[in-house]
Amino acid sequence: MSTQNRTRADGKSASPRPAKAPEREAQTRSDTVLVLQGGGALGAYQGGVYEAMAQAGLLPNWVAGISIGALNAAIIAGNPPERRVEQLHAFWDTICKPPFFPAPLAAPLFDSLQWPLRMRHGLSDLAAWRGLTEGQAGFFRPRIPSPLLPGRRDPATTSWYDTSPLRSTLERLVDFDRINDPRAMRVSVGAVNVRSGNFAYFDNTEMHLRAEHFMASGALPPGFPAVEIDGEFYWDGGMVSNTPLYQVLTQRSRQDALIFQVDLWSAQGEGPRDLGEVATRSKDIQFSSRTRMVTDYMRQAQEQQRLLHDLLALVPPDRHDEPAYREAEKRASPALTNLVHLIYRNKSYEGQYKDFEFSASSMRQHWGSGLDDMRHTLEHPHWLSAATPGHPFVTHDVHRND
Image 1 (tube, rainbow, N blue to C red):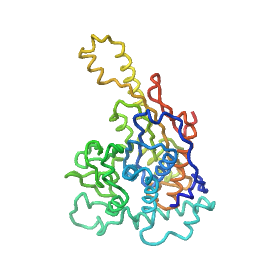
Image 2: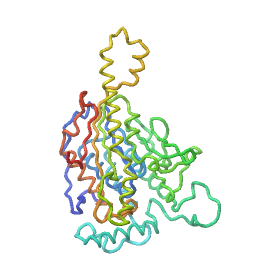
Image 3: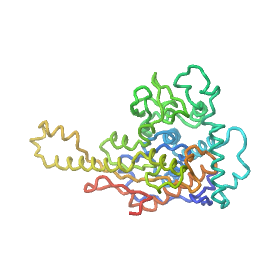
Image 4: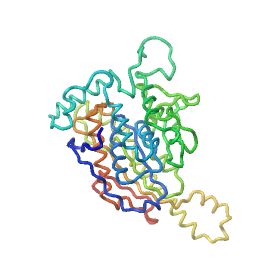
């Protein structure tokens, strides 16, 4: 995709413009964290968010992801800053190409014309159907022979699709030596251990990350097979939690942080009016992972940690060796957190298949939405200002009116 012609969230051409530079103390904040939720084809929204961040010179030093968020994290962390947007475009351009036959002749006009809603819905249906039957180039392909045929298989081959093309794509676009240098960027991705059912995080501060770790994070059954890592098999982390926000907030050091939480499913929505909308709404609720509930819980926890930190400052020095003081000191934290929340909003023509509708047209729509939302965020520089001791955990939601 050319960097000279972008698509706005409404489908119209958007002229390339640098986002306003955030007016904040970028050098004094210890962590700038990008948290990327899972959501399949909707993950192009995260690419647009990152492009706007890069235009503003707002570069994370920690990226955490699950499922498609983990794949975007690999592209971001596995490339130097000046190439990240280019490689994100290369990744999405690759996986949004039909593997066999060209897209319908109408598809190139999908972005530029005001198609009737029914026509747009039909083209999206067709693209989703093609993805299911043909697979997606550089991502997955139908498994042959079919898993329905008799015969004993193992966890790595029991699935509808073969994801070996994804490994080739990652190895082409990602520098894993760079990923495994935590001095350049911390990287965390989540998956589920198939045997134990327990959630697992793979972090470059604790282990050497390979393509398998990112593929495992996105191995959603029964479509994709489990991925073997050091003798254990793993599935998509979204089966347990579709956002790594809790992991970031609990595993971070006692340093201040600016966190961008980029979600692809909205917990809020209208009541369904037919069975198709029931399926869409239930998927939104299931995969939104109750992000705001986690955020509220962590805000309360950090406020208590900060209060404990302030109370400890009142304890006379001659009591600092007391066991109670030492234990409280472990639980206290002076850290300040500013959380900026961005959520993808559904297009009117999207249905329950939106997370596996990988057409280039829809991808550009998703990307443009992320670009617009992050630019809107950067037009409110006070949102990026550091929290204060009196309010140690502050949240901002680009889609909230209050």
